[in-house]
Image 1 (cartoon, one colour):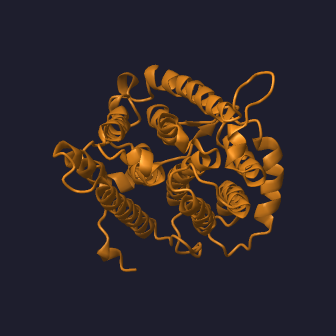
Image 2 (image 1 turned 90 degrees about the vertical axis):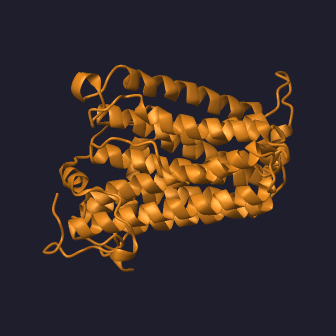
Length: 382
């Protein structure tokens, strides 16, 4: 694929600062120590000629395809899907979790660690978060409660953005006792419960307490969101590592809030003002459309952190949501479902174009390949 066909998202100054970037993380989640035993064994089974980014993208594609099968069976998150579709989704998420966990180990093992690898890892996580959120909503049939589906669908994407927002402020990615690994295992269990008990299982009223089973995942999501938000905003609002408590780029710690705030506000207004009940009839497509937009701005935030750059608000990612909003403003003179599909295609193309251009530009600058291991004599060393 000729590099010249794709635009270059980064300036020479950003590329220079990217070279100087050092990965920084702190904290360890509850399940990480036992999982590390499995992951250390697993990485030894991978041939040394397999590039770390190849592991990540294969895991992501499996995760996406298995979730899309669920979406085909349950487009409104109210239908029943075959047991095998839920089992496949649980397996797809487990494969993604495992390959995503060992890509860094494979990079160190093959002496191919680079800034591109870190970016690629976070970029795939951003997309995976969207599909896992949709799959979770389908698994418990929460489409019957549109307001809760909206909350549960978008809260995971918001949490992912906030995790990198606090990293942009503090310079360090922080992991809590209950973090991504634990949430992924909980979702796998939900998939398996739906596989063996059906989506209707979540409508079961439990004896003694008199509550539906569905209440428990919703409470878990809400409680987890409140806990995570407190931790993220404690870091964000207590000042960053830049000048006068600013971000790594010496900008206001609140700037990233404009991006996620604008997208979520548009998503909520379009949901509530839709004359055709767009979200209620097409919740999965709706979440995927806005999810692609949030993935794009999350990737921009990761890049802003790694290159110590300002995060600019104007972005082509807002075109899709903007079309939906304008169509509503003019009394939906085009069928909202058609506009939603147009927004989905535009948002997906915009995300693909940005990420591809980014990877090719960084790979060319570091003199490495994205999906194969460059011989050490030609590779850029950290």
